[in-house]
Length: 132
Image (cartoon, rainbow, N blue to C red):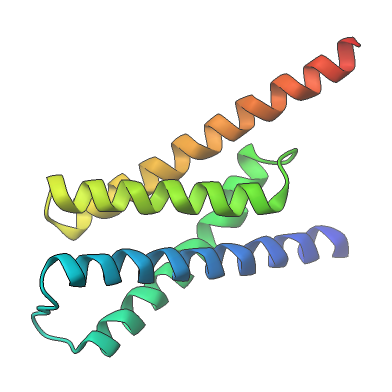
């Protein structure tokens, strides 16, 4: 039981870190594209806010997707690939939709698609090893 809790905490920390980094990268690129115009916040405050959102979202969804889909996937691939897909989904949602809700939904969709792809990729390898 302690091992499961330890692994879950580790995955949560990795997800929080990946979420914060991805959120800051998206915000920094968006600030460059928008000519550093922020409506209510300074650049420092905006980066702090988005990093906190990334920590919360990554810290919550990383263990959830890991235990549901990614039991056989290496932790670094689960963290990096899902956060990268969420970042791309967020950027696409922000450009096409414009609202934070659409961008957030696109980010979650991207992460879910990446998790499903990883689940399928590692299931195929596992089945190949069992038949050999």
